[in-house]
Each structure stands twice: as structure tokens, then as C-alpha cells.
Length: 548
Ligand code: GLU
Image (tube, rainbow, N blue to C red; front, side):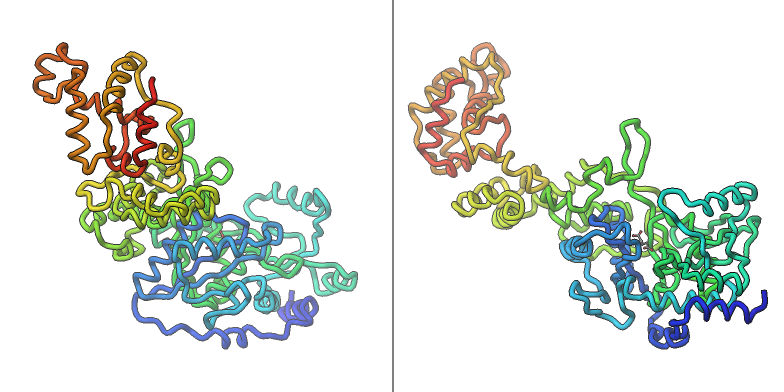
């Protein structure tokens, strides 16, 4: 076909597109960057939830920009009408905000662009995509495709599939060879069209590309006339990505490794558009070990932990989640944390070369351990305020109770924590706290005690209750328990007990255990003296009158 026919087709199908690509480039000046400064972005599609894999990627991008004093921008990729969900943008903004992932450039929820490279929402950029599509059509690098999608199956597509099957080296679209007159006929008929790339490849070519995480890669080059603009004028991912990341001055595209397979198509597109190739950094995907012992991608279908809302619903501190992810990005973080227990995670710097090349395995036990460590450093006051904050969002009844006796609950949170040289590492999220401290809300209904011990325990409780007085200190409490226990036949000296256990009903630890179980229902609890102090005399006595 003659070159001027391409231009005629372009003018015919895009009569209203007058904006030139030069004019567009003039709106997007080159960014002035110092050596090493990274400009990157987080480009979520608003689907109504944020997958941990997407957040992982946002967090990597955030750190790369932060660690190079670069630029991070947020681009909303809302071109897929089918996936669009009401309020989905709010969900994204809310989660990013919750984790303090701040952007240098973005669009506010009420539609104001912050930054000079907007609009930062793809559905507001259609005139730009159309201008580039028109240019490609005029250059013969793209063409209009009139194959209709009907409800269910589409006949032309079916035919095309047969054609592809005969020649699976390439996927040429039947409309790629339409003449100007044929195109005009379709247009005069009022038919809508998509725009497809006219691939220059034949199916036998290979393409090499360098990935900043994975190194040199090689794959079959694209040989498919893929869609650049759908019939509604909106681009699928590839076209929008090439144009936006070029105009917006992205220096590194961080995205999940599921995009590696389509990178050859993106490379061809950059070339067709005359753009400088972009640097890719395909991060490994977070996996889980499935029931069959095999590794699989963490998925929102099976894993509640795949949805970022899980962590706020369960009340994990945000630093715990971020530190866990940092350890997944770079295993050096754990060593750094050990050597720098008091520094904020933000002081840990990593570059692209430090990002893991292997898929990290999600393990909630590890997250819980990190969380326990972090919570163990909280003061009682801070733990109380996190708990209350969580309760206000998730359990209003509990919030009322926590507020009704602030001092008591701060005291509860402070137990074995404030001022303790070895604070307890027992709490990993806010949701578990009510159950964990259930004895503070109600008398225990279940007791962790061996039925064989019932008689001895009851006798000890009789003696303790009879002489019970509110203790003044932990020491005072323990001395009293020792005296009572000794009087009813318990060893207060462990050495003596070990020499002749048959002479005693048990050792002092056993006696304490019976009291603990009567008061809390558990064999394990924070310091009993503190619990007695918080419960007060009458409640303590009430619990001590329980008989097993
Ligand atoms: N909107 C794409 C996604 O959510 C973004 C991929 C990219 O970062 O380029 O998967």
C-alpha cells in the first residue's frame, strides 16, 4: 500500500484528532535528573481491593525513589471498564495512606493533578492515546480493525483463530491489508473499529532484553497484531504503558514478573512509536506453599492475606507489615534489623541490585514474630491507643469498654512491658487482644487444669482465700503465697522438693499455677500481682472462690 494511503486512512478514521504528538511532547518536558535519581511509579488498576503483590511492588517503587532522592508518582490505570469498581480508587488511596506511602505526583480524589505530568488517571488521557494511534496508522505501523465482537462468540475471530492455527508463527489480523476504499466502506457503514499494531515480525525472530532484576533475557519476538485502541477509543495496558511511561519520564518500570511474557510486545511498541527503550525491573511474585507442598502464587481466591485489608482488619501494626515486606525484598534487612534494633525501617537503604531474584514465600508465622517484636517495644499507653484505635474501627462495643476505664486498660497493656528489661513477646495483632486478655472482661469460663489436680488445687485455694489480703507489691504477693502454700504442704525450696518430691503436694510453682488458673483460666499469664491489682479485691476473691 502506498504511504499516502496510510495517511488517508488515519485522517479518515480519526477526523477529530488534530492534536499532534509533537504538541503532546511539548507539554511533557524532560525531567532534569541527577545521576542515579530514579523516576518510578505505582500504576494500580482500580479493582476494589489491593493485592499484597501490588502493594509489594508499590513499596519497592517507593523505596527506590526515596533511596535515590528520585520521584515517585501514582498513575491510576482505569482503562478496563470491565474491571472498574465503584470506590476502588478510594480503596487504593486509603491503603497507601495508611502505610504512609507518599507520592510526589498524583491526582487527588477530587480530581486535582499534583505534578506537571498529568493527568495521572488514564481515562483522562484518551486524546493523547488517540493522537499516537493516528500517527502509527499514518505511518503504516497500525491499522483499523473492524472485526466485530458479538455476544458470546465472534465469527470473524473464530475464522481468524482457524487462520492462526494454520500458521501459529504469527497472528496477523485479517484487517491488516484493507485498502483505503475498503476502510472507507466500513466507516461509511458506521462501523466501529479497534486499532491494531501491524507487527513487523514474522514469528521466527527473537528479542533480547535486559531486566534490572533478572539480567539478560531472551524470548520470541512479538508477531501478533495486538490491539492498541479498543473500539471505545480506550487503550489496553500495553499502548497506555508505552505512551505514559515515556511522556511521564519514568526511568525504571517496576512491575510484577507476570509482565515478562508480554515485554517483547512492549519492546516492539516502543520501537514503532520511536520511543527510547525503557528499563524494566520485574519483581518476583509473592508465593505460598499450597496444601500439596508446592509453591503457588498468593491468591485472593484462597488466601485472605492476599488482600491488604486483611492486615488492618486483624490489627497488625503497619511497621510490622512493612518490615516483613522489606525482609522479602532483601534478606539483608533481617541482619540490619538485628544490628540496628532501634532505628526506623526507613534508614534501611536498598537499590535495584539488592532486590531478591527468587519468589519470596509468604509465612504468617514470620509476620507474627516480627509483629510480636515490634509490639513488645510499645509502652502500655501506646499499645492501649493502638488497641482502642483498632476497636473503634472494628468492634465498637469493645471500644466503649476500653474507654470506660482507660487507666485500667492502660495498666493491662503495660503489664510485663513498661520498664521491663524483658518485655513479653506475646501479642502480634490487635484482634487477638480481647481473647488474650479475656479474663479482664469476664470471669474465666474454662480452666486449663488437669482433673487429677482438682482436689489439691481446691484445698490450696481454700487456704489462700481465707487469708487473702490485697498485696502491695509483687514481693508481698509472692511471700504471702509462699506462706500459704508451705502451710498446706508445698515445697518453697525447689532443691528440697527435687530431693524428696513425695514429701510434698507440689512445689511453689505448682501452687502459683493453681491460683493463676483460678483467676485467669490459664496456666500462662502476665504477672499475677498486676492482674490482681487491676481486677481489685472483690473480683479477685470471687475468682478465688471458684472450685474445680
Ligand atoms: N495496571 C497494571 C497492574 O495493575 C500496572 C502494571 C505496571 O506497573 O506497569 O497490573
